[in-house]
Length: 495
Image 1 (cartoon, rainbow, N blue to C red):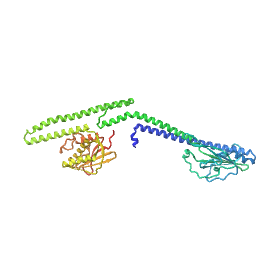
Image 2: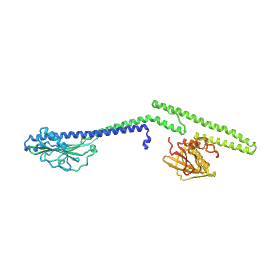
Image 3: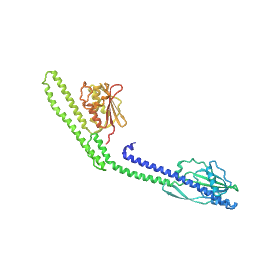
């Protein structure tokens, strides 16, 4: 999963296509190998039947006292021929009545005096070189094929090869036999009975699968070519995708409010147009944010001067009741101005990213509320290190704890790790908020009640800070009563 996350979608699709191509090639090699084996096996059976018929005709053309010697001279390393009574069937011999009937009909049409045909087949382990064989130990190597040796025959026409009469246990046939360097062999027997004398001509053939070097060569060659193409395609895709990586990184920086620079216009025409559009958007967004921040700060600054002058004139106003009412309203205006200044600082994204323990940061906020006389506590905490703007996150946590104490009577905070995120829950024991009003509370100057003093910017500041850090914030009505403010921050900051 980590490896796939490092690759772009295009690179993953390219690897998938290459994998499919390799899979198709492997399947094609297997199918071709099976077809080759079937074709060669059918050809060997046909040649075996032809050899038995011709040998039978040759034996009948000789005197009876020369027939045994004649069939001995026809034998070789893989074929053994006997004249006389046939050998008894072995335990693992498997007869083929359908082939026997077809062969008897074929021999009859050829004019051979054959009254009965016996066809058997049995598996046989890969035999070692027969006795009397000298081996030249120089290997013959080829691409994808196993080592072989040259065998020099020194035939003994009297000795019968062991594979003719030995009944050795063999593993069951499987698809792997097609690709083993030493696949199992088969002993194929055809016996023809002379209808006049009752003697039998028996032909034994030690048959192996065709060589595997062709199949291995196809597979190795196709795999090497596919891997070479994959390397070239990956290098090209990396070069093509480089502008998009830069674009993604700068877009993430823009979303976090960090300073971004114009991207170099490079790549194909459509890529260049995308980069140009991003550069224009980056310039417009930066100008718009700077304008809004400047407007808020100018507004707050311009209001502070007249407000201070009005406060100086309040003492000259009577009676006391009227003066107190004016002071209360001026304090309310002062609170709003202070909130606007705090909001502008949050939008300004003051401070650089630093690694900090959220548990320690939240503990400082909790202690501050306790010193002010509020009921606040922190439980079930564990060290959770995140990369964030410390001042902004501390202001965010302070607003959440203050709201919990102000509107819910007390604050209960927890910090823990969940996957790749740090989770902070701040619970209160208040009446909660109607479900349809939860999202509206994050809008600037939105307040649920006028009974408690406030500017309506606290949660707006919180959401601005959290989104700036790449996290999320939501309000949840607890089942046991009260409201929960749940804040999630990524543990690691993406560059």
